[in-house]
Length: 139
Image 1 (cartoon, rainbow, N blue to C red):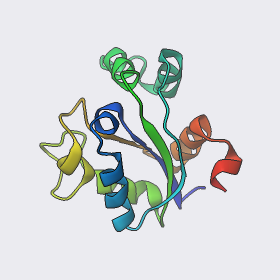
Image 2 (cartoon, rainbow, N blue to C red; image 1 turned 90 degrees about the vertical axis):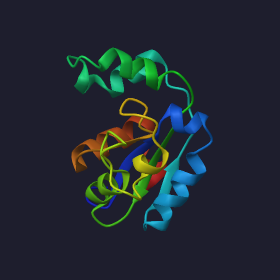
Image 3 (cartoon, rainbow, N blue to C red; image 1 turned 135 degrees about the vertical axis):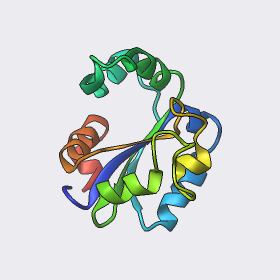
């Protein structure tokens, strides 16, 4: 997976607002290929485990609460230099600071309700993909 695949999650705010299809279309038009996808409602335990790296951060509790507030859509995406390409495509965490044409500029509500998650390294992309998908789902 390293290098050419990454994980993204259409978060509950965007999924619940019916923006998942538009986000996927936007990413596909940018050269990403969806190789695995599912719709799910994270439990508190799942969200706590997935975001454990942020456990000591002040926003951890609100992040877990937000990510368990509705359905989300984890996906494995494929493209050359996938992690960096996706992070560029989604834009800054705060949509007010995101570049024009990025997912967050187009679809996010706020810094906290920012529509989409993207892995920040090849190592985390691999770990995060395994959290949501069996390896056979995205070979």
